[in-house]
Amino acid sequence: MSTFTPGLVHAPITPFNQDRKIDYAKFEQVIEFHIKHGAQSLAITMHPGESVSLTDLEQRAQFDFVLKQVNGRIPVLAHVSDSGTSIAVARAKYAEAVGAEAIICTTPYYWTPPAAMISEHFSQVANAVKLPFFLFYTPDEMGGIKLSTDQVLKLVEQLGNFSGLIDASLDWQFMINIISNVWRTKPDFQLLAGNEYMVSSGAIGATSMISSLSSIAPNLVKELYTICRTERYSEARKAQEDMAALMFLLKKYGFASLKSALVAMGRDCGIPRPPQNQLTQTEHAALAKELMALSFMNNEPKGW
Amino acid sequence: MPLILKGVMQSPVTPLKDDFSPDLPTFEKLLDFHVRTGATAISWPHHKGESLNLTIPERKAFAEVAVKTVAGRVPVSVHVSALSVEDSIELAQHAQKIGADAIIAITPYFWSPSQDAIYEYYVRLSKSMDLPIIAYNSPSYLEGIEFTGELITRLLENVPSLVAMKEASFDSAKFLEISRAALKVRPDFSIVAGVEFLAPSVPLGCVGSYSSAGGICPNLCSQLFDACTRGDSVKARELQFKLAQLWDLFRDQYPSSLKGGMVIMGRPVGPTRPPLPTATKERQAFIAKKLEELGILDTEPHGW
Image (tube, rainbow over all chains, first blue to last red; front, side, top):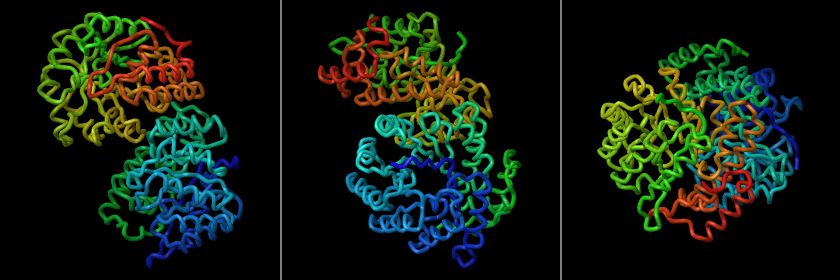
């Protein structure tokens, strides 16, 4: 099994033109921005990057583009989730062929298959590649589909390349049950915080973190992650609270707030693709005002 | 006595005789055991104490024994939540009459109350008596009914006697939502974790926990809290993993497995009232084996 450690993983957004096509000139700037501002790895493309609104060809084209742009400077993890197992499998194989460092996959979209079929989905995707496989667990986003501890432990046993769990469930008992059991037989198995709640996850064993808010506040993300990696969790409280303030603010305005906040930070990447709405002018102005009122945002880069 | 909530607080189980009638002499022994083994406060009857399976007169009788037996050595709070809010009010007034130090109350059962209804409930409780109130947030057992940051802000602005919350969502996002809202209005507001989830919550400002396993392994609980407060993250994680195994053991058929475990520890507290099962001999043997594997039998007090 690989000992690849993703570390602080930035999850970029996807910039769109006015005609809703991927804006590759901007995307280049986005990728360079993340590398310049502390990304130890990149995850292409997670839900905040609107993976679900991209066609299969577009997702593959993103892998190509990012891998070429990064040119080996940092590892690139490929997010390959889809509804159909065979579609996710094909995308995983493609990612491997073009040089991704690892595969990320969550439960199938829309369907609510029995547990055995969900395990089958993960097995087929993981078995399709030799790359490290990271299971992304995000039940709140995925219609409440839950994984049991036993189910995940069995997959760890069966899949030699199953390298880590990316947790966005925030379920402490679940995380502990997985990591404490797996570490007995696979001490290099990793727990990754699937969002920026790193203090609690780190305290119970997470060593990496995937951050979409690195687009907005990369310095705060880095500070939070760095303190947590020295295991001084109480000292990370301030950074965690600031992070939570930013997360709550964006949550209040909905999904489109991420791109709206980017505009406010001087990094206009367009608006989300439908069916996501963009914020109204009034909402955008209110969000921008609240964003700038967060004192820690003064330390964050404006522009590229 | 002044209500200071900190450290490992114990919520005893409710001892019953073989015919399921209240066993008050054993309750006295159990209270003494908890105080002697380091409980920083006593709170009874949480759900672990089978609160909803006791009649209101029974709850009053036990509460009187609790206050009398603890006799001011540590603060005693009475959990007043009952199916009928009218009963809760009566239990709260009774708690004050017998000299308890505080009451604790969960959001009302069954009706899926609105945020306004929850607000009115705590206002009414606070007007019905003079004791400090500890709110209790437990969305996973109450179909998602929970405190929002807005609700806690509104309550703290209007209910001076609301001093603390038992926060049992076990979710970093919810914890931060509540703590950020509460501490802004009331910097000395105390947030207490449910069960022993201390490693993920103490760094975020959690003051202690209402213990689940304290009747079995009070030493382990205290060691975990100490490791968390002195910032020994490695030790805290190790102990938290152990307690997580115990929580899995006990949350299955809670609290009957806990009562079954107490037989093994030489502190029998009788059966569990239906509809909850009583731990069978086989279940007890299974628990005994687990406790032995975890080293609990060698490191924790046996007998009263």
